[in-house]
Amino acid sequence: MKTGFAIVGCGMISRFHAKAIAEIRGAKIVACYDAFTASADRFADEVGCKAYHELKEMLADPGVDIVTICTPSGAHMDPAVASANAGKHVVVEKPLEITLKRCDKIIDACRKNKVQLCTILPSRFSPANIALKAAIDEGRFGRLTLGDTFVKWWRTQEYYDSGGWRGTFAMDGGGAYMNQGIHNVDLLYWFMGEVVEVAAFTDTLAHERIEVEDVGAATVRFANGAVGVLEATTAAWPGLLKKTEIHGTTGSAIVEQDHILKWEFAKKSPKDKTVRARLMGDGKNTGGAADPSAIDHSGHRDQLKDFIKAIEKGTKPAIDGEEGRKSVELILAIYKSSWSGKVVKLPLKSDPKPPKKN
Image 1 (tube, helix red, strand yellow):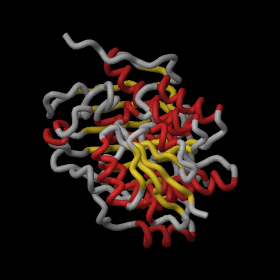
Image 2 (spheres, rainbow, N blue to C red):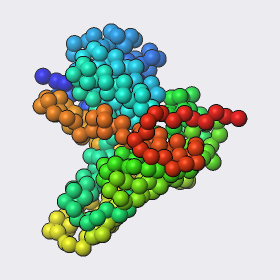
Image 3 (cartoon, helix red, strand yellow):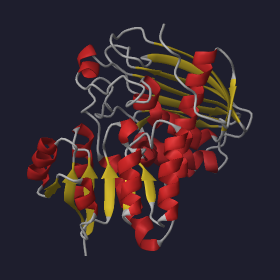
């Protein structure tokens, strides 16, 4: 019996989900919906599924088991909650939503209806990042001291002009951090643990007609005492591969995109040679550093496979709603610090509001 997927929002990112689902044995896209009917019809023709012009009708389809939300970021909540209320399991593209209040409504709806929820953050499924996480959990770094991540990408003015929602707080939720940098924000949390305070600067330096930041730098303190830096930009031509650096008293590792640049520990392990042979070197995946359509879909595939397995076994998926909420909270804390000029402590008590324009 196949697991039936339905796609809500048939823009660019839906194509990556389609490619991922096509590579999962026993999974199939059976339906799609988009507020623009022509987009739904076009997507249905491409993947061979049924296009619905009313969300309620699609959610009544008994062949739909999982609904994947691929709408703009600030339009995730309504279809996600409706899907949960219809008894469907829910997958939401990153970010889970653009405010904590909206994230919590999705989480609560899924909990109330006893359906599973997954936030798409596929960088956790990269073999290099999995190896790094394992080394941290094994204590190979000793005491963690520094955790840094850098997303120095390039987006043209045409990119922001291509959709009315891009670069707006109402629908994009933020800029270089919320849209592009969120994958590495999530990774740093996964590697280093909870963040307790943040100090940040953000600005818009290279693009016009957008409300959100295209450059930012934040310093954080983790609950374990370590500190770190999170940089994110869409204003670094020609666009560099994203990078994460983890340091401790007995080890250092650097991951660039999906490959390891440095893997050194005071105490050697027989596994090190295998890790270096398999994961060191230059990769072909640019990760969307300059082209948002140039991302690899394998992480989506592996995460969706994990989600299907969680549904079948009744276990928790690798990245559920609560996990997805954490990167949103840290990004909102970065924004609050930048807007207020103050150090911000976590957890946040409420959603910060963007400053009013003069």
